[in-house]
Image 1 (cartoon, rainbow, N blue to C red):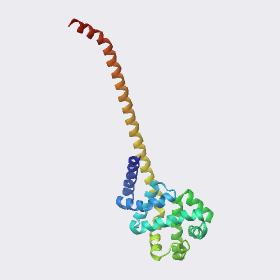
Image 2 (cartoon, rainbow, N blue to C red; image 1 turned 90 degrees about the vertical axis):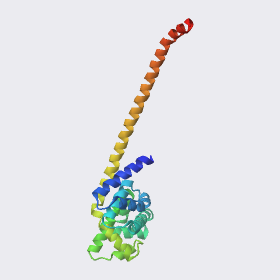
Image 3 (tube, rainbow, N blue to C red; image 1 turned 180 degrees about the vertical axis):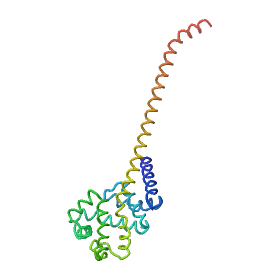
Length: 219
């Protein structure tokens, strides 16, 4: 339910806040910016939060970088479905075939983002034209390119932070399940106790009724 979902999300955010250079408020704000695009790409909530923590940890601000990253994720999701020049440009950045990158986007969205980031870093390191590479994908603007290169700095630790967020999410789920089981057991025992008490009262009543009848007749 919504309460359990909120509790799991809170556990993941707190754990990521302790484990990364990002604060809980930064992770939450970034996560809200990425949530819609993450859903389109088929990412789970802890994966989105792990990505949010990774981006925030390298100084990417939610107001600008989060919105920009969400747009990139939407372009990736659309390219995987429609193909065309956008998918060609993305696969060239990632250094794989169009079919391979399309499959990765659909089956491992986080892995696709890491490949994209690693590809951008490689182009920049080798002296290539990052702006042209992004322009081929439909991502324009020097400012956007600078933000994406900054975001790419998180690629090496992204998988690890996603694992941390997922573990915290699952641990909270386990605690919630255990608490629910304990509560259910308590309620079951309480009902059993009440039923037993009712049986006792009925038995006592059956034995007392004749006595009370005799007592009333003597009055």
